[in-house]
Image (tube, rainbow, N blue to C red; front, side, top):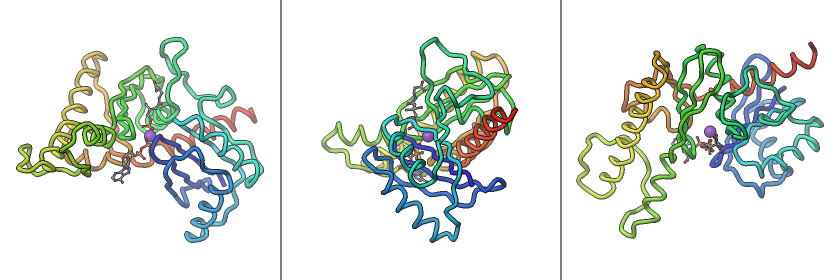
Length: 259
Ligand SMILES: Nc1ncnc2c1ncn2[C@@H]1O[C@H](COP(=O)(O)OP(=O)(O)O)[C@@H](O)[C@H]1O
Ligand SMILES: CC(C)(COP(=O)(O)O)[C@@H](O)C(=O)NCCC(=O)O
Ligand SMILES: [K+]
């Protein structure tokens, strides 16, 4: 079976693909100190819990944190006897090359989302990913990543506000009933929630004007369903977008190898 690993700055997700469907999806925090042995104990324990056999023979990794890739490679070598495909490395090809400034390294999560979104919806897309950063990936008619927007993530902004202001507590993001908060926590939640709704709607509007054509908007990332409750801007919310892209990129490279 194929193990797909999506390593973001906050969370690392392992998903096991049996060639037909995902059998199991597991999430842990991203920590570059975690060793191959620690990954394996965590992974094999939860696989047993979910009654999925641990027979991994192929691995594909997307990581926005370069330092974690070393230990993930050791995991593949010691426990799965394979060499992982790593998105963004020269030996991992993409169906359509990104068109960005020379020398720019695009985050591999954004490249994977682009491949996935194009497969599901065709071109002319804006993919909004609510991760550690809130990113907007613009996908051209032919499926190329052509740039986008990087904004601070929702929780990153809340944390920065709490750190910077002595009287502001740590709060969780939720959808407030109204814009006007009548206590400190409610004021902060309104600022974050309605602020991000406005940010997303505003940036999508500007991108559409620049592109001069209709563009579908796809939302993904842990907080996407929550923000979808506050705006009509998303055509679709897909929590498996990155994992689907990893399966596609893996298949694309395997088919190239055998061609
Ligand atoms: N289901 C969820 N509900 C609420 N918050 C979530 C959920 N999933 C992730 N988050 C939060 O959203 C932020 C981004 O998480 P994630 O999408 O995993 O980021 P990354 O891909 O950058 O690691 C984190 O602060 C995380 O705690
Ligand atoms: C913008 C990001 C930090 C988002 O990562 P994430 O929130 O998924 O951890 C990541 O895609 C990244 O490090 N990008 C490199 C710069 C770029 O994509 O242009
Ligand atoms: K991400």
